Length: 482
Ligand code: GLU
Image 1 (spheres, rainbow, N blue to C red):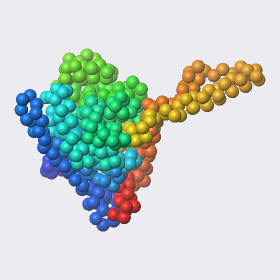
Image 2 (spheres, rainbow, N blue to C red):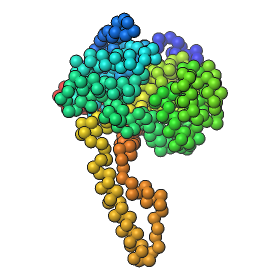
Image 3 (cartoon, rainbow, N blue to C red):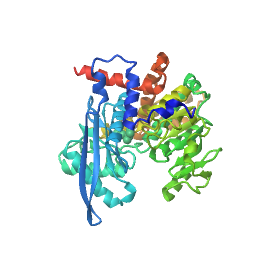
Image 4 (cartoon, rainbow, N blue to C red):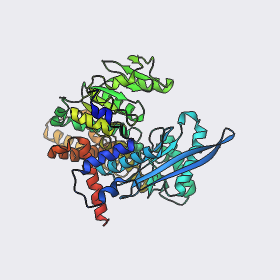
């Protein structure tokens, strides 16, 4: 397979081209009104800004982007990435993915993405705050951050901290906007955030895999059987997405995290690694070398090709490409990152029968919980605040009535303390967020797999996901008379 001319002749498409190729593959199976295909595919606008910030005694010029792919629904949504390699192509590819992702999981947003070309490790907190506030100022000035028009969120290299600065900067510039906190999601709890947003993408990956494993026919297509229990997982990237997904899968579903690939190499243990330990080590040392609990090797690339049941790329785009795709032995790939499999690799994997749970579905947990946060901000009230105690009172009524009946009739029933404990507790925000996320992931999987099974010519879950998503975007354009 390594010398397959298909792999060596055609150049690897760029990330932007990869997304378009996947889009094109899907529209081949659809009938769209003339011209609509092109309208949906193209990126509506990309704003590039160069701004200076005085730091360390000199003016430093930074380049930032905010790309709006589709405004068929507003606000448009998508994270802001801080990385030294950010460029227009990448931001546009990511914005396009956001459009399809939101459509697939029925989150009522268009697609957008932003990026700032810098290495966050090179700047201290105070400097990053000044840079972030200045970048925010430039975007707010052009309504590229706005609760009704464009709502950023964290992405690679950004977190709650940056979102809090963005929200505060927007508020300073819009002092009378009652919806100001809805201008960005992924904020800390004490600044208008929502419970469960930090781990949402990882949680969504867990729910995606659980849903996949609820369908034995789908599991069989990957040549696997049974549930998640005992499945050997290799995770690439122990950032916010990979860490939470790996932790939940190992601690709650009994999966075995056998390999963790990071920048400096791979940590391996056939019996399973302790994800928390690896994460702490990574945060402290910047790599996994010498981390206890596993065997370290510098050859991270080989670990991607190692034998395992599930490969979870959760870092950068393009890590599975035309040159290593044929050697990937995992029968199931779940895309935690955006675009980890190139279009060329995708074709090779499809040919091989590898099942890929695609990014636009698998990592949609983040934007789904962002949607809940945005709704919370607009309604100015925490989820569950009105209902929780009423629900508890109603449940208590039922329990006491059952106990009274049992005593009156001499039935001798006793409700188990664990049942009572769980039944009597009303749902608070985190439980509602999880329920909403689980429901979203199940519904989207259902839509995607129905097509996958009904139309075998589509060939894979990704194409099915694109067909569902593009169909919804097209329907929304049609409804507008466009
Ligand atoms: N950056 C995340 C993504 O790629 C989250 C976007 C959001 O919450 O708006 O999906």
